[in-house]
Image 1 (cartoon, rainbow, N blue to C red):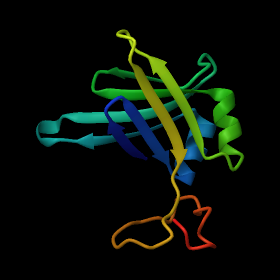
Image 2: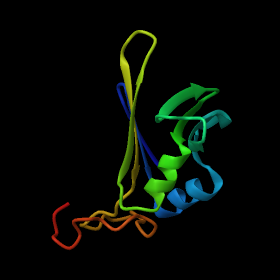
Image 3: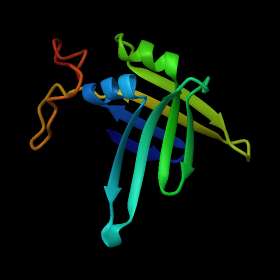
Length: 127
C-alpha cells in the first residue's frame, strides 16, 4: 500500500492483493518503522457504519474508513477510486482518495509491480 499526503489530502493506492484483503477481511494495513523503534501506521477499513470515506489520526496511525458496500462494489468492478471529503473543525476540507494501484506502462528499475492492476493505457503506450 502506498500513502501520499499533501497538505489536506490523503491518497492511498492498493495492489490487487490488498484490495482482495480489504474485501475479505475488512482491513489492510502497513507501517513505517523509524529509528528508536517508533512506528507510523496507516490502514484502510471497510465499515458498515460509514456512509462516506473518512480519515482519522490517533496513536501514530492514519485510519481511512470506507463504506463496506462501496468497497465490495469497487473491489469487484473496474472502478478505479473511492473519493471522499471531510469538513474539519475549522471549516477547511480534508480530501481522501483510495485507488487501485496500476502498473506503469514503462518499467522502472527496482520496482516490483507484480501485484499491481494492469494499466488501462498499457495497450496504447500512454501512461
